[in-house]
Image (cartoon, rainbow, N blue to C red; front, side, top):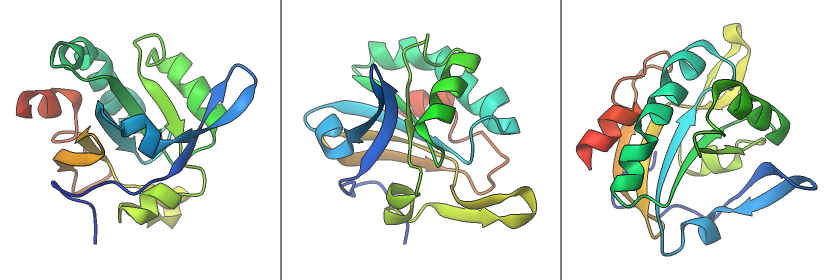
Length: 162
């Protein structure tokens, strides 16, 4: 069963590159008392993720800021080195989007959002979604039916629903 509106997110440890290399990010601590947007993609450097999903949040980052969102997080089942490089190459990092990896898909599995597409080399990857989380509780949740589609999970759609 996948996560839905009204659910509390499970605690999880994600990873990013910090000043001294890879560092753990405790999701529960990150969300506590804050309004955070999390959007997830099937894979860094993949087509729709790079050409549509990340750019939609770069375009809307200011709108989320205006609505009191404390942080916008991009999540993918990738290692932190890939997430850092991808954030830099897309302009997401410069736009203020936090790029986090879920390298073992532990969080993604815990919220029931995994899928696999072996012919494309994607095993236990994240389905495409976007959600608004307030103090650890999902208040808006938009998931795509197809991993190659970025409509309801785009930054513009989530922002319009707020």
